[in-house]
Length: 237
Image 1: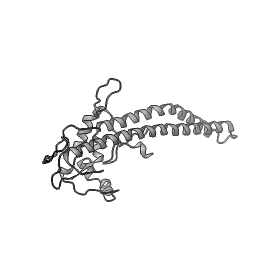
Image 2 (image 1 turned 30 degrees about the vertical axis):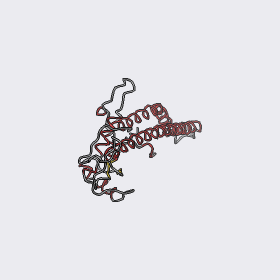
Image 3 (image 1 turned 180 degrees about the vertical axis):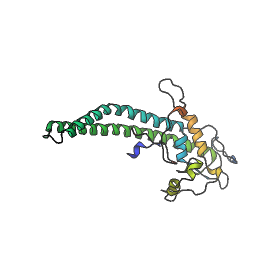
Image 4 (image 1 turned 120 degrees about the vertical axis):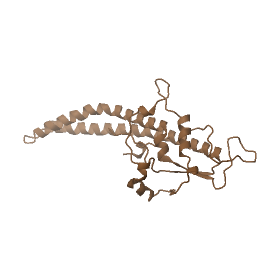
C-alpha cells in the first residue's frame, strides 16, 4: 500500500486560551499570548498517534477518502465479474481446441482492469497527499500556538499507545525498542500536551458536512481498522 494512502495522518491555525498547570507569566513586557516557561518546564511532548486518532477532522477525512475510493472502484466490479465469467468459460474448454479469441478477451479485460485500478489508486493517493498536507499544517499551527502560549521552547512529537490496552501490546513495545528518533521512555504528565493539542484542533477545525454546512458527529462514522497505536488507515475494498 502506498504510504500516502495512510492518514495521518492524516490531523490547526488555532487556539483559545490553553493554560499549563503551574505556568507563570513573565515579569517582562511580552506579547499577551506568550508565557514564560517555568524552570525545568521548557520542553513538552505530544502523542501523534493519539492526536490522529482523536482529531475529528482527521477521522472524517479518512472516512471521506474511503468513500471516494469505494465509489471510484464500483464500476470495476462489473468488469471483474465479466472477467470471472470469461475465465470460467476458458477453463471449461481446457480439453478442447484452444480458443484464441476467448483467451485474448480474458487477457485484454485483465489488462483493462489492471490499468483502471492503477489509475484509480493514483487518484486516491493524490487525494491522500492533499489531506495529509492539510492535516500537517493544522497540527503544526496548533502545536506552535500552544507552545508559544505556554512558554515551551521545544515540543517533541512521538507515536505511542493511545489506550491502556495498547500499552501492553508487544507490537507497541517492539516499536519503542526501535525508535526512529528521540523516543521518550518517561514523560511527566505536566509535559504532555497531547490532550491540549487535540482540544485545540477539534475546536478550530471541526468536520463540516458539505451539504448542510453543519458540524459532523464523527461518532456516527463507521470505525476504521488500525494497528495498535497507529493513526486510522483507509479501508481497502
